[in-house]
Image (cartoon, rainbow over all chains, first blue to last red; front, top):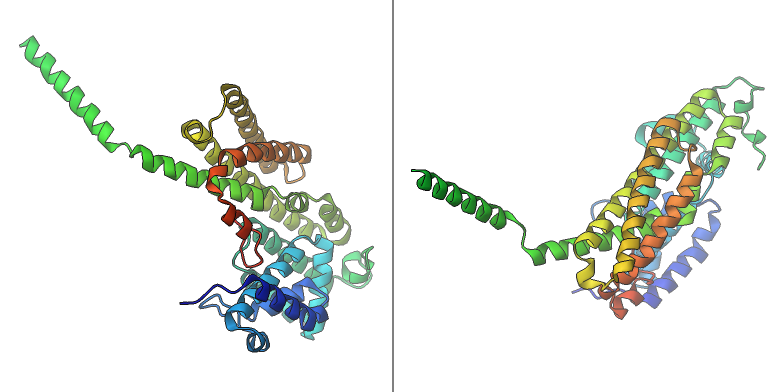
Length: 159
Length: 192
């Protein structure tokens, strides 16, 4: 029978993950997608080899799950403008063709499966809705002729 | 003959009464169900529906201003439609949770919470006003969009938070100290 991971160990593992890996990702969107990729969709458990070798698989899974929820919460608190900025940054980091990226994200909606399990459904609904609108804004920029306001992502006041 | 009809009718009435009494849910089972539903509704309100950062985010005017100034009309329309759906979902979930709590108060609260008569009356008025406000809010959002009644959102949130505070006390007997501590655990999920 599995014993529940000790709280202190989980906290330590989460700090370790934060310090060594997540600190290098400035955007909450990047962190959320990265952490979602560590999850086994059949079991809902997270697998992080480095963390598991240092602690235990159970502790590593709990710590990764906690960091995933944190990234999600940070993203939900962002304004729409910030989400557009993060999505744009993520797009640039992936070095994908922007039009292909937007088309794939609109079609596959990976942001819907990249959310943690134990979260408030309304918050998940808000985030999915914001990303959908952010994608539409990016798409409008891609299709707008040069010189029009929506053509340039650099016109937003915060940039 | 008249006597026979009278007794037959009486028999039918008695049989019907027995039938309806037998169909009623046992009192204890119904009570436990009401308490569980009330506890879940309270958790949903406190952790999912009423936190100010989420409510402010849903009804944030800065998002609308950003879309109006940085996106074409088609995206503006998409944004308003999307945000309306989220706002409606919020209003409906708040209303549903309040209805669950009211059901608890109407049926079982006095058995468990030991409320005074005056508190019960105040609560009944609070519930009635809150349900009316949440329904009006829902209609306003439906007809005029997510930014139609932002002040009413604030008032509804405050009234719901007041009812949550009273309900928290009424349902306190379900929170043994050990559980309350583990609720803040890093490993613990949001109470829902």
